[in-house]
Length: 126
Image (tube, rainbow, N blue to C red; front, side, top):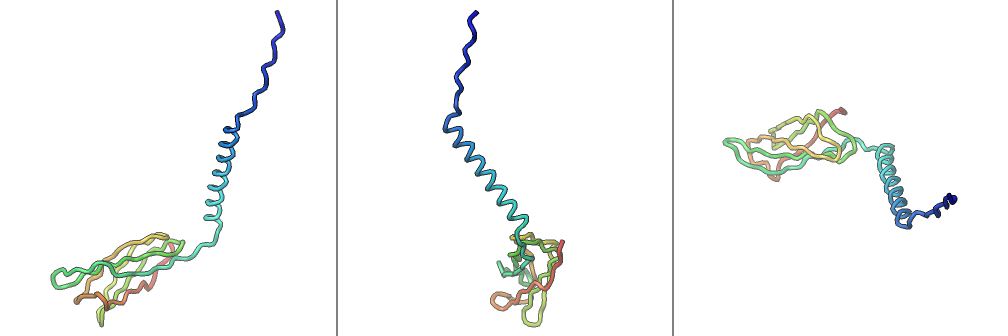
């Protein structure tokens, strides 16, 4: 029986090296994004209220209010206040997520367009 010849050693194809390198770069990029989000500075909740749709409903006017959170932290127990002349309407939201928005409806005796003052006087950290 003749001795077996050793098979010639095959080098991995170039495309295999390229795909491996791309996979490594993609994995490192994902880890960098996750790490910067977890370890980077976080801004506290920053809430602003804006007037949306206004519609009459019987003897009152209903104003849709959008509350946006521009910060990196979630705000809980959010209070929303609208003043129209000497009338004040309030509502509460359970929470507004970071970089998210929620809506509430406030009722007024008169049309609030152009005259309502909206504030978010308080909230807490969840």
